[in-house]
Structures are given as C-alpha cells and as structure tokens.
Image (tube, rainbow, N blue to C red):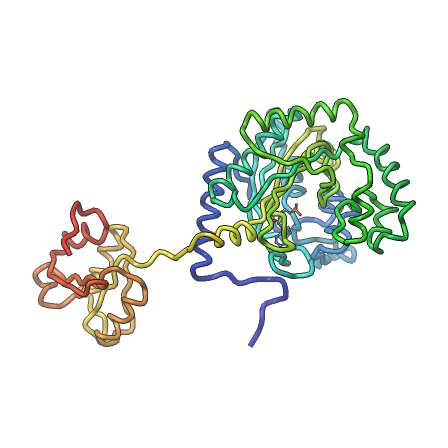
Length: 427
Ligand code: AMP
C-alpha cells in the first residue's frame, strides 16, 4: 500500500463541502470588488521566484521544490520550480501579456495549490492552497486600504472574523530602509551572542528577518530593537497615515504591530497580516503588502502594486470550528425491483435528472430491503419505489424515509414534490 508524500493531504467527504463554500464565497467576494481571475501555471522558471521573492528569504533559500527541465538538450536543463506563492507568477504574467496597457489599475486574483518544503505540522503543509489578489497600477494608500478591506470582507463572509485580527505595519522604502538596516545591524551586533544561529546568519544577510524570529531568547532582544515606524521618511510616514485613515473610513479595525515583517523581500511601505490564536503555531491566516519595485525587478515598467494571499487551509480549519459542513444528500433514491435495472426505471432516473433533481439509484440490483437501507445511509429524504404496476399508470410510490409513510403519486407530482417546488408538503 502506498502512502501520500509527507506534508501533502487528501481531502474528501464533508470536508469538501467546507472547501466548496470557502471557495464559492471567495469568488463572490472578488467579483463584488471587481477583481478578475487570472489562471496561472503551477510551474515557473526558478528565476521568477529567485528574483521576485528574494534570495535571502526562507522560501528561496530552502523551501522550493526545484528540478532541472530535461527537455532542454543544450545544457543541464533550466531550473523550474513548483510555485511557492502567487505574486511573482502574477507579476510575470502581467508583464509578459502586456497587461499594463491600457494604463490604470488591474485588479487580479488567483487561487490554487502552492508548494513549500517546510517542516510539516498542524496547519503547515508542503502543498497548501492560497487565493490572493493583486492590485497593480496604483500607489494610492486607498488601494492598500481597499485591498485590506477585501481581505477582511472575505473573512466576515466566511464567518471567521471573530477568530482573527488584523495587524498592520510599514516597512519603509528603499530610501529610508538602508538607514534603519544599519541601525538594526548595529543593535543586533551588540547582542549577537544572545541570538540563535539562524538570526546570526540573518544578521549579515537581512537583519530585518530577525524581527520575525520566534525563538524566546531572540524575542527578548528583539523587544528592545528600534522599529521601522520610527525611521520612516516623510513620504512613507504620510502614506502610512493615509492607509490608516482610509481603513478607518472603511470601518476596518486594525492593530499596529511595529515588529511585523513579512517573509518575502518585495514589500515596501504597507505590510499586513491577519492573525489567529486558534491554530497553534500556524497563526497567520493571510497577509500581504505593497510591492512597488516588483514589476520593474521582474523586467516590466515601473508600476506600483499591492496585494495579499489567504491561506485557504487555515480558513477552512477556522470555518470548521463553529459550523458543521455536510455534502448535499440526494433528493431521492430510486428503489428498483431488484435484479437487472429496468429500462422504465432508467427512464425515470433520466427524467428526474433532466429536471435538475439529484437522484441516486442502485446499479447492482440488490434486494429492496438493502436498497432502502442504502437510501437511508445517503441521507435522501425520499425513496421513490418504481413498481411496475404504478409505473404503468404513470405513478410511483413515494416513501418519506424519516416518517416511513408512503403514498402513490403521479410522476408529475413527484417532480414538484422532490424538486422542492411544491407549494405544500403532502407527505
Ligand atoms: P505567505 O505567502 O507566506 O504570506 O502566506 C500567506 C498565507 O498562506 C499565510 O498567512 C498562511 O495562511 C498560508 N500559508 C503559508 N504557508 C503555508 C503552509 N506551509 N501551509 C499552510 N498554509 C500556509
């Protein structure tokens, strides 16, 4: 017997009912904000992620599923990676397809599987699902606030807002960040011995990453480090003030977390995360920020952007905390007379389906008792007993499986009844 690969999951049964709801509300909410879908490849050239996400991020350093493309005979093969996130691919597609023409904002969303070779644990998988929106083409703080508003509206609609809160921060821009970097480097260098091995490495590569460390000892040192919010240039400070003002106007509640840095290098100015205390170490349910240099970095024009990604596995986990999800049962189960299923019974099946009524039938011609048991198990409200005599009269026996009462009805009435279109309940 084979087992699935570590960190990957099978999803089936009633869990799928929750996923379907999460995804259909997701599409409705994006539609409300006029964010249009973009369908992207799952595989991209590794360089897209190296360049887009940043060489010093955990994702690029150690988490990508990367392999050489063996179709290329001319060299050892170009490196390809399963996408670990959606923004780099969206921006690659935006540039490649010239979506910056005509100029103006493009609001795009993607959804689907992402892959990161992380240490699997509760809420953290190697294949997980994200949906994300990218607002490309505006540097206005209103774009940041409305993107955040979309994220929060979605959490409201899937009814998980009471488990989450929004944290925001500004991580500055290439003008003001270098000075802050050197301030941080100076401070952490003084406390080098107290920092974990990872943070010592981060100290030379990207000191900002240290602020994200969950190690307890590092936490004590981080607590007294200076924060980016105190080092913002006037433009970044004004931008952040405006984001907050627009969030207030949109009635979006937030907490300012000056220590929040996101795990990807492309963010400038606004960074945000939606956090929960319900899922243990997997505390982030979604997050994003502004990425004004990214389109240019990936070879496109200088177009600003802001976006976010939602971790759908965690959304589903939160939805299941307070609601039970069930797959839709059949409206009715056609009980045949045993033996080979008759053409008249098959015709009835077809006729009900043509009316858009999901009905079940036993293909194997088991005995009537066993079929009734089976009907009960499917959760169907009715059994339709297609006796030959009744069928000859254009009728069937309709049995209410919960009250165990039954009566003969014409097939026309049957359709009205089990299609839930009948004005009164006669059983
Ligand atoms: P990120 O792109 O890292 O900001 O991730 C955005 C969201 O995706 C996070 O807030 C999580 O909810 C979710 N996420 C990230 N990594 C994983 C993972 N390994 N397993 C499940 N969900 C994840």
